Image (cartoon, rainbow, N blue to C red; front, side):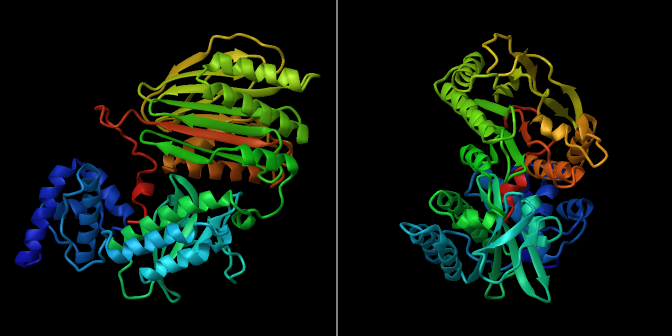
Length: 500
């Protein structure tokens, strides 16, 4: 194909490896494109059948896509690259950089983290700069904030594109060469890492991408851990002070995004600096996911206290191994005892079997959850109704639903649908349904859909909400390897491979 025996041999090895990778042509091209591949599906297909050529760089990106898949199955299998690349193994230099990052943050304040990260990057001949997402998820802010760099808008910059798509984004221009790498803790998006090679390493170099993935993954964990140890990280992410009620709620929230092999969820609250009575929670095991969303009456500090009490009662009962009925009873009794006088909380408690997709739920006077299937809202879940929590213990038969693979479950508070514009028009459920279906058609994963939804609600109300607006999206896939044809790929597949 390329006219040299070595190239022909490499291409044959790639085709042989592809037969072991268990990828369809569409799946292979999706992985290749996510890694920066430029050839179209037809060109790649022709190359694999010996009918066309690919440039060396594109061939190596394709080989890397296959290697990632083989690495998931059996790390010892590898397709060789055409060029000399960075060593992606844990050689002495790479190991020193990662160990230096860990040891450098031991027994030091959080504001030392950027300097330690810079030293780790220097050990790999890279210049690193940390950008953190603000809590409103509108801009990426340099950390530390006093280094003279300007914030970068999420919706209009290449750094923002890397954040939105959870995909490493190379940049070559008049201002130099750099790689924007998503900063993740698990699947939670924390910001981006600007990586500038000090040498002439190609930005698509597989070894460079692997080193960046290791650095960004470890740094993401360290940012999350260090957020609890000081105020410097929060000071960058907070654009203005929170109210007391909002501070209380934020300290009780789980990570806004989480997931495991076949389950991903994401949530967001607005106004993020004045939130008072809305909150949500979740927990996951290998077989079960538990979800809850609450909306306490009122918009004062008392609302925050009531929501916090409901959340604590729910968590304590759930962690003790009790089911939906006991969870609801504990919330009822806690609110009635500690907040007499008619205080109440609306909410939804849900339990999803991750092996079968069977959902059980209780709705305590809350907006009905929506079910999104194949890009369309197919129903509002209308079973399991009871009075709001705190207005007396009531028994109810939980509602049930069986999810299909790639279904989305949408929980939200009335601040979403009842947001009003200047003419008094509600955002409304019809507008919410239309928005969700358009996002599904665009292929946006739950975290990006949540971000865009909250911003759409804020824009509808000209940036000033009369009520808290909260949304929690969950997406379930039938267990991998069960023989089910997964027509819709895992929305975090690119995040696992993003820096590569």
